[in-house]
Length: 246
Image (cartoon, rainbow, N blue to C red; front, side, top):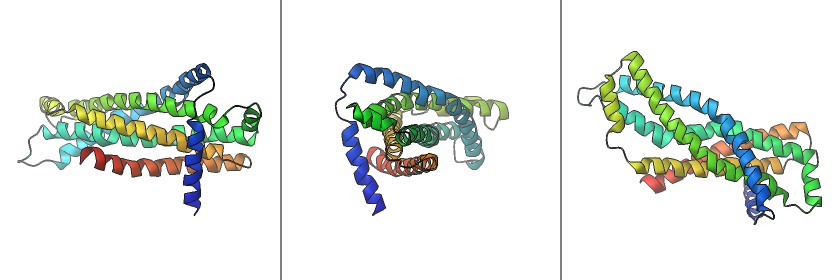
């Protein structure tokens, strides 16, 4: 019953969040600020994880596909497909759920327990829209950019691992990266990323917004935000894969 309560409350909050903004100029300014806070400040961790992720995938694929019937360039092809279709959009979104989701929930939760949200409502401001909508829009804009960077760095990490370790000839790896490339794969990754960005920002904002109590409850809200965001990312990953690829 608790789950259905949260789902109903979440949908009702979304209806309030998505109302037409009273002052679009203020919202535009907040979106730019949130793009920096939620996206650009995550670039470092995204870059590091992507490079090493691409290197590990390449080495593991090379050692687990050592079969005379498989062409050598299949290592590069498998690396590219793994990074574009799954690792960059899903793994990076899960990492952002932990980093960005906890930040959103703790920020809004702190405003709730310190009665700053109550002050906004007294002034006649749509507090949920003012606080959460810019975060949702900013995440849906900047997260695909991070994933595009992650894809390039992941492939570069695989190329670098091939160059350093020599697990396969570099020319074969490069050929595999380019072999039968489909733009739809990137489109699929972007669709997933936008949906995941919406889930991260809205779910984290919801748990922060409903926080009641003090500092301990803010911590609990941050934990719930990360856990539920991760669960729904995995759930919608399955649904989107079934719809877009099958």
